Image (cartoon, rainbow, N blue to C red):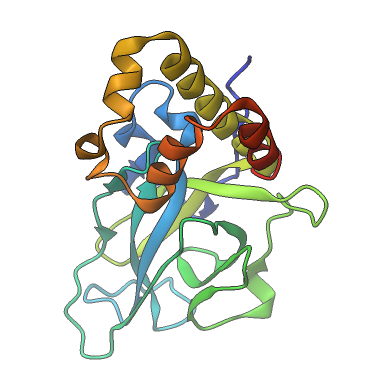
Length: 236
């Protein structure tokens, strides 16, 4: 199976070589890149400590910090990509999703810097911060009702003033869930044909540090064929 299914958006905003570039995808090893999704996001908004005479408005998005979830349920927290937080009017918002939800809609206002960000989940949870300006608003058309995409990892640029540009990788939901399903089928194959794997996954002590979803999968793969197939068809 070809794994490279994810796509890239542009970096919305303004880019100069003097800015600090970041890419949270680099936190991941090997094929983990294909299985990750945005789990939690935190945003800062306010007046920059360092002034920029070219800005159209006084308050900006100062920075972003994300946490991601991998196929195995592991959480990976990225660095905070942010300007200094020293003014008295800084507003902070964060949103963490349940394991059965995902971010799928993105809105932004930007020119030389980012002034507004809104991100929405499949279940309708929203994080919104900043001041919306119609003349510089952008609603990336990476998604559709019939073929929803999952936001995976963010990348962009920042400096001492604020968040200058932001983009992200995304993957069609169906491709992500097929990949997840393959992982379940591979684990089931291992426990059915490898005694060492069967012994490991049947030991409750080895499941202690897993989240509820992964514990459920560990139980699922031990079901007889008919009950397993009856449950598995509802996962994709």
